[in-house]
Amino acid sequence: MRILHTADWQLGRRFGQFSEDAGSTLSQVRYEVVPRIFSIAQQHAAALILVAGDIFDSQTLSDQSLRRGMQLISESPVPIVLLPGNHDADMPGGVWDRVCELSNWPAHVHVLRASQSEHALVLHEHNVVICGAALSSRHAAPQLRELFARQLSAAVPAHYIKLGLAHGGVLGVLPDTVSISNPIAADTAQSLGLDYLALGDWHGTLQVNDRTAYAGTPEPDRFRNNERGQVLLVDLEAHQLPIIKAIKSAAFDWQSHHLTLQSTDDALSAIKALAQSLQEPRSMAAEQSAAALRRIVLQLEISGSIDHAAQQAMLREIQALEAKVHALSLDMSDLSIRASDTDLSALHDAGYVLSLAQQLTENLSAPESVSHQLESDALAILLEVARRT
Ligand SMILES: [Mn+2]
Image (cartoon, rainbow, N blue to C red; front, side, top):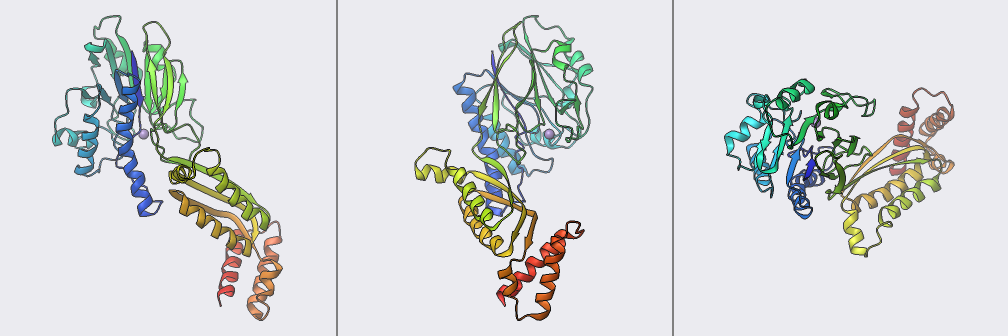
């Protein structure tokens, strides 16, 4: 049988770090990816969809947002199994209680509720048994192995395919920098004889081992450079290893770029080259290329040291680029601004200001300057004020 594995939809997520327009579109596309996932399931003849947690972004989503999400989910063309994660933990009075109060799910939508976690879900029409470890609070790691073992202890025909759904961090697999609040042992599937363990929580696609994988979020929501914006198609045959294939589902492309600048020439050419590279690899017509640019969410981190005039020219290029992409997040906190001779000569008649600018420039050239960033910012402000007066 073929299943589609997805996770971390986080419907209702807000993107306050961007402008209101750009942020609300990004919230909107999280809903729009759901029917696209269903189309992928249909195109590839998946018999079942598993969503491994964090379907909703928070417990405090409005009733309207919940109804909207539920309506979309109920349009699934095949049976769909939902697992509460940490963002949408199955707590009393929480989002899943509210969902059930708001309406009845159609029969092909299954929620693995925490209160029913002593039993696996058995879908006889598909010859499949599905274990689930719903989180009942944000950090409430169920004893996964013991829980699944109890769920599997009920009698089911031996030829049924055994699936698991869990939400958390696999120990020893995710980067050290990630704090793991709901730990999952890497060998869970193997030690319990599961054919496949579908995981959520890590937002990139990541195959943990032969029988365990993270699908990642189907629409990116951050700049971490991992594989994301995909769903997994998993082919399962009794007594064989699963065949796992990632399919792109995202409409938006989140890219992070870091530029290190040392000269005035660097500043302009680096931004122009970046703008060019965002357009170029897409060998498509100009209007298609422009449309693709409008689906890029760009993070730009700029470090190094340039003079004030170069920074101003560069900012104009960045603003032009910002107008072409969907959203741009700019971080220049590691860029220090110098005063060029031209900058200083513009201050020639401004006695005190000039001596202050010279002092700051001198301090900035000292390698051990403690308040480097502060001085750099002060100089930039000083030069900008002088330029405008
Ligand atoms: Mn999560």
